[in-house]
Image (cartoon, rainbow, N blue to C red; front, side):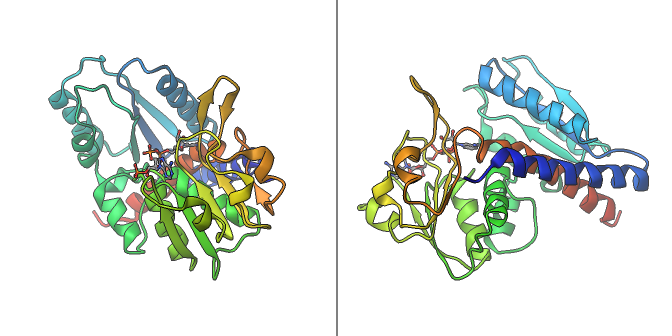
Length: 282
Ligand code: NAP
């Protein structure tokens, strides 16, 4: 069992040390701005956790909660202000945004140097080219879990189920960069089970409860479940844990696997952005 809570605690401790070093060197802590629009209850919980985790790691939190009916222009103005605030090293706009706002334009308005969610086209492009940049938090959390599980992707066959910009695509780039042979599956993949069975590293990021069953897992494979699905049985992943655990060499649970890593990697990205900005000329 890969214990995401324990790995995340280690990352948070490391980040707190780096944040403290940054503060001593630059006379201010790294800063993370969170922007929360609307009434989505899950988003409110996520942002609260992110702010608390930032403060606990010695990162200053700048929180903005514009009215739910804020206009696109006013939100763009807020982002321009945050882009220009020197003490803000990272900006996180919590998604999803209310329907009247154009999320894509909002994301594109972020200064790529402060894009701690790694979602701007500039960040995605750097990652696709294998160049250093800010990487989306959940996929980099998956890579950290693989490292902790002692699974080196080099020379392995990796299968990622899901091709979202948030998880599947960036994770495929990271695995490729780590020398795995990568296959990405999606809703039009004809024989998902056959592809999954080839995987030494199998990651599911789909949003379909228990889609991947034990019969689709290669014996000894490392299985990472990104899915978080609220069902009548509570929170379940995209992997059918009970059957997959019988076959896998290592597996993440839901909850307590990938989930805790996402916030930890956000903190890591903020400290990384702060360091890069401080070192940048001008
Ligand atoms: P998404 O944007 O909805 O993407 C889902 C992907 O799964 C799409 O590429 C889709 O294919 C593919 N898919 C759907 N049905 C499929 C099927 N039957 N067979 C194969 N592929 C299928 O979702 P996401 O944002 O990547 O999130 C995926 C899951 O991860 C969700 O449960 C989400 O809640 C969870 N998540 C968790 C964390 C965390 O911190 N733990 C963070 C982010 C996301 P098409 O492209 O063909 O439509």
